[in-house]
Length: 70
Length: 295
Ligand SMILES: Cc1ncc(C[n+]2csc(CCOP(=O)(O)OP(=O)(O)O)c2C)c(N)n1
Ligand code: SF4
Ligand code: SF4
Ligand code: SF4
Ligand SMILES: [Mg+2]
Image (cartoon, rainbow over all chains, first blue to last red; front, side):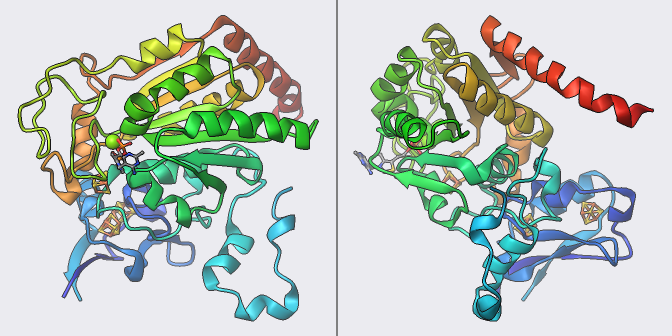
């Protein structure tokens, strides 16, 4: 079992221009901006589960990204 | 050059790895004004690598690669350390030689490129750890600055030898205790940015990677000034969360805590008079082009 990040679409405010998780994720091409749904999306195979995205998203009070176990 | 050289011939398109296809389809080679804002929407020039989860060196690598003004005509020179685990997964030409000799290799390379491609812009960028830059490679680092070699040196300063388990480095803080330096460091952190200025660098910046726009500006200026004027140096704080006992998600806060006005990584920038004049001339060149869009 390992942890990966997951975006809660309804809570994500990427449509208002938020890019915090995309910008601070240490891994390249791991959180992308979904141009159709206008939300952030995690590429699970690349995610190392560091939780930094959760920290920056919740510090901004969006609480739109969480760690889940696979 | 843009993407001319990496285009896939139609017959082979479907059998190429998806990462390569993405590079051709949406990476930012050849794009004017590329920068950190391209991340998340354009293919990055860095693939999966083995740095620790949450390592700020990875964040720094993302920004540096997103901000190089001319990646298709840039050659990076790396050195031994955690950064050398990333270079094999980077889509910019790069050279790895021996621990510490990066600035000597870059000097020869920059000169050779000028001979081989006269009249063409070819940037050389060194990227190495603090052990490589300040301890084992200090001779080569300084000599390249004394000789006014035209390339940018970037130091990923994590204040110790991370890759070998946390030995003391010249850039470690005084009094700091690490696993492999249990007695605590007895000397001050080497003031390499000041030494760089005294040694002839035309642009010197000290910062953390907590603000990508700031990193972008520093990298652009570092590369452009090195291209036209002379050597440049950027020292980035990329804390080794593993060796300083932080959790994977604590790297960003560690950088923010270390960049306050009186902290050791407070943002500092030095630009020589010659480099200032060059930057001003670049601004001037830009202005006439901006007039029509205002009408
Ligand atoms: C000539 C030589 N001496 C020593 C080593 C062992 N060695 C490998 S990585 C490393 C430390 C690198 O430290 P630094 O440059 O600060 O990079 P970091 O891993 O901290 O990013 C050492 C001493 C080596 N590979 N080659
Ligand atoms: S930080 Fe949160 S709200 Fe912002 S884009 Fe990421 S998931 Fe969405
Ligand atoms: S957990 Fe870490 S690696 Fe995974 S998406 Fe979030 S920031 Fe990126
Ligand atoms: S050992 Fe330290 S510097 Fe190296 S990858 Fe891990 S956290 Fe990063
Ligand atoms: Mg180091």
